[in-house]
Image (cartoon, rainbow, N blue to C red; front, side):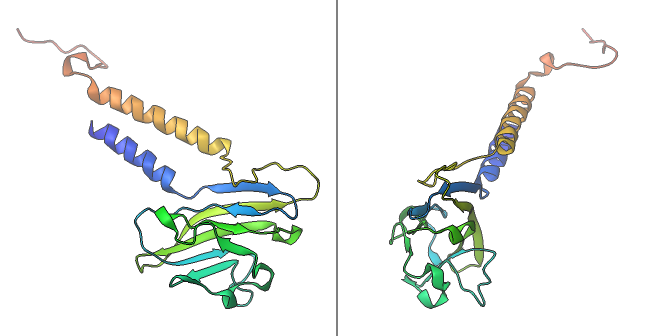
Length: 186
């Protein structure tokens, strides 16, 4: 039973890591950038950034601290186009909506949260592609596209956990012995 608990904890830890989301949309769309922090945590600051923008010189996509938006920290191209999906951030929802996207909005977006007055922690990464080709490969609604490698690791983790669980549940008289048989005393 402890092995099953360990396996479930391992799986839960694996699932708690941020997963990269792929979104492809057309210019002019409004795009929700999904991000979830732990429920019940006190969110002291929220940063949405793009690694290709230097926050010291260019600013952030979105910067929120002490219950207010700091537009002076925003990159000029994002001012007036980004808002919290849920201004109260209920249940840890720190998603934002990027309005009226343009081709230059294509890039990697990172959701970084400070909770309970601790340091910042990366919660989610979104790869946004804005294309005018008329074909969208991702989900406009911010749906999650999990790659095959992630699914394969999950399947392997479940199988390994099940095998370990089964081995631990075997009774001593059902154990498989390798090598020479051990004589039993009567």
